[in-house]
Length: 142
Image (cartoon, rainbow, N blue to C red; front, side, top):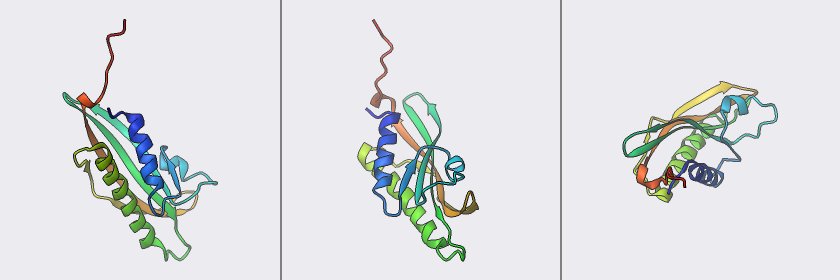
């Protein structure tokens, strides 16, 4: 049985074991990365929404990776590549662990943006399709 808590636990585990990831959060990166005491090398998995269909539940996430950009931007491509790899790694391990079909996800987008600090990284919209029969719904309480 796969539920949202299972997904969160495995996202955390797989992200923490990814090279370059120092911190994992489940909050909006716009909140976290604007914190003055933020640890960088950060992976964020934000649940955007959940859609129920006839025989499947869709979990729509946005995965982000960000790290602090040096003043001369000399680490820009390294950070973006680490972000691409972190997102791919977490997605691949979730597919393998839960034996899911390959999820739908858009291109992985690089970014370079000012938060509390200037960050670079990557993000992707990822949709995991979980069969309804994998969930246990107990509506018949006695």
